[in-house]
Length: 183
Image (cartoon, rainbow, N blue to C red):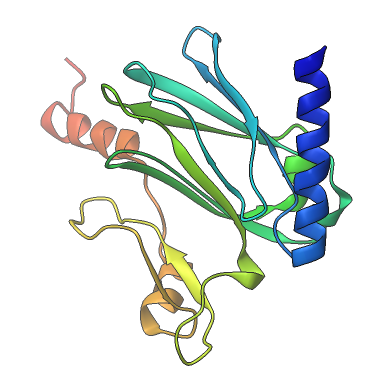
């Protein structure tokens, strides 16, 4: 019962800070392993950040949800990492967090934790000259990491029109090319 009261008070406090300072409304964060066993429960801070304790290696599901009506009508970026492994999603409608929530798979190596941030895209990072930045996810087959670029750059415009192919789809195409008869 004390944990429940503490959680309610801390969530209310985070929400009050977020409203007062224009931050991201607090989101509940649940992390579970492949078997569904809870590994972490907490909330994001007013900057939209969270971090788990160190976890055992394996696949984890990070679930983010909120009941805040302040999320409606806005787009968010979600970035999660466990060491060098990073997962990013952009243009996530705020209504998804309010509905069933947003779930993301993250692979964790030995003795690492999961860190994450949720950021409103309209208030995303800006350059020194005040330009809005957008996140460019790493392209399949490229050595370039995901990165922030100016929204009006040629790279950002090209990324909006680029089609995305999953690594599973590429593997299926390669297997078919090496074995056209399916033997």
